[in-house]
Length: 109
View 1 (cartoon, rainbow, N blue to C red):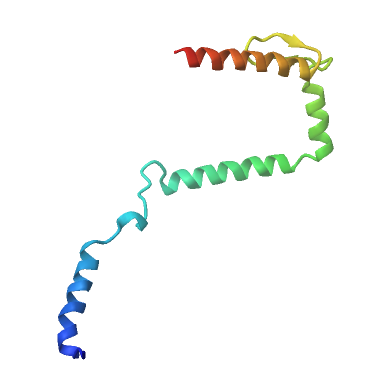
View 2: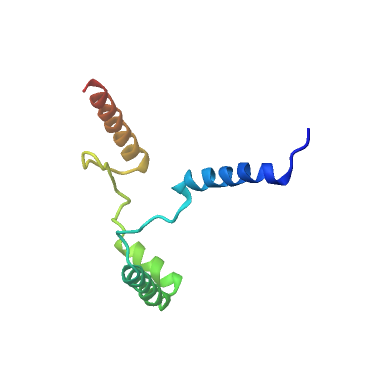
């Protein structure tokens, strides 16, 4: 069975029209309403300015400042109840008990 070019031409045209009519729009660019070019430029230059300010300090100076600001005696606080512990393990254990209690309370609701 032979098909001539003239008989296949309407089929090809109708298939191409069908494909063009049912285009998938999921690959088109998304609109960004929240950020403008000015906002992006401001964030970039703010970060650049911070980086330039921090580059003036050496690593040793930054570490010394952090050590000075650290709480004396190595105290650790629970983020849930504010109880002060001498070890990080104690604060972590207290926080995990609060976390477990929060999970149980959310399951009951």
